[in-house]
Length: 379
Image (cartoon, rainbow, N blue to C red):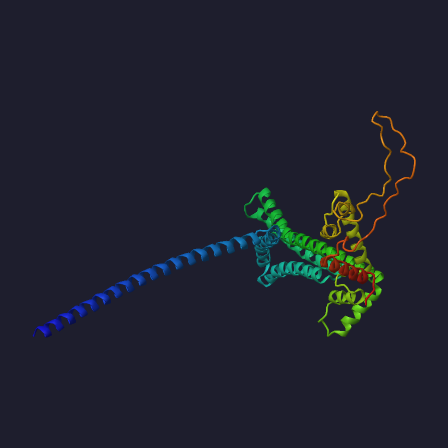
């Protein structure tokens, strides 16, 4: 019995522990889910803020692009044109409709003729048609607008019989006539401005094209053989696959052996000589070598004064005759007569001169190869 109870107690304890672990796991899972949900909400809000800022920047960019002087002028002119048509057309309709309803299409035909001719001027400018075509269309547009202005002027002056004073009737008539004429005139001025702007751009393009042709002509005169070879390379390649500038660079390398389109072997030799002269001049000005080659040569080949100071050298004997002796009293007298001391000639011995270093041999060989390549000698 005690064994069964003990087993039952252990089972209950195990089940309680399992329930505790399950509850802890579920609590941790709920915490993780809440944390993940909060993180997602924060990310969504941050993304919404970024999207809002991006839309604000896009609106600012569109507004800045729309409010440029050119756009304001073009769109403002079109708004004035529409206002002119809206102000002049009703008076014409009332005038012709008062005469007969069959004359009702005339106002639309007049306004349409004026604006269609103005659009024709713009089209002629775009297609660069002859000047007489543009001026003919301008004349037709102004004629239609002038006739419409005459109708509006008469209509305004006729309002005096409907109870308006003479001054008010004249103001209405002349105002309608002016509005009728100003619309096409504003549109024509706008077209003139756009044409002048386009002509300025075309002039710049023509100047660039002229400068390019001049450069091509000078290049052909100075480098005729290279240009001819480049043209043959372009014609040999499939159409559109090889540009002339790339072909010219290849032709230059074929002729002169360098990929720089401005250098030749003679110029490379002159450049090398100039660099060597500059290094020598800088070494002399500073009193010591400043270039890497000069420092290497100075280390490998010390100055003769340094060699003479070496102990045990056979060349330390002086070659200068002895100076005259000075009498203790201060007066100088000639040396004693007799056989003069002859200078001792230098006697070389084996090992008194240091051997060339391996690095010096490599540098000398490299210099010889460069000199031969620059002067056009190939082995």
